[in-house]
Length: 393
Image (cartoon, rainbow, N blue to C red):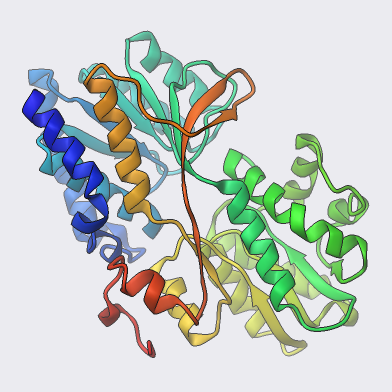
């Protein structure tokens, strides 16, 4: 066991170099035919064997196979933990809190010591992790904070507030000159705590520009009603997000953008700026805005640095993306798991209030990626290979 622990610590510390190719693979949306999907099936077969021998050590639950981001995370977890000799299994909730709970129960029944979980629904996941905690499992919330429970031991995350603030600041810095610029707001899923934090960060920098007339909100009456408030309550944020949520779904984002542009008056078109919550939804929204003959130009944000959106950035179809290096996030999670398995206290650098407790947390830095720094941020860092893109200089 000591050899395994030492090996895993070394692997976690060297994750950025070891996983150079992981982020560049398995990013197609037809996941059943991808190597990652085959690996997932293989890990389930391995888990059956682990269940009989009772030696599964780390269980990972991720939200869905249907977004490239989570397939990247799967590959990274399996690489880090597998190379170090630790038994592990990744399960996907596929947008269902019920499936998520079943996944947790399955992993607990196989004897895991540590659960790493990215919640499908921040509140609904509380019941699932409480079951794990009751069985002596250490719970690490991954990327999304689980709320309303004291059964979360640790939280590993990117600074979600900073992500939203970076998106908002990009719109400010790159907006057309003048005032009265139409601003279209979109948000993630109302069930995702991070969606609130992203929006809070964006609002913190956009609100002064809304209040002084630089931007005019084009697609949310709830946001207009609250436009003079620099700080919003959770309930106030919820009213806005309820109007502009994409549910992190490409099709929902597309339909909502189409409806908003159909309803928009002429003065809410022309040169516009758009708060796109993540890459998948940003591409859908961008495609809609690009085909509206009354939209002269648009600036749109994203996050996750998905391959398709990096190509959109190169092609000028998406203005920016926030790069969150999942190699580092996965390595931070593994380092926490190592500490737990070694009977030590994991290193943290902040806390997050989940409504019941202040959860000890570890934050990972973010990078804004535009046409100007795609190569240095994503290619030179070996997150992606240049061959995966066209038009890259």
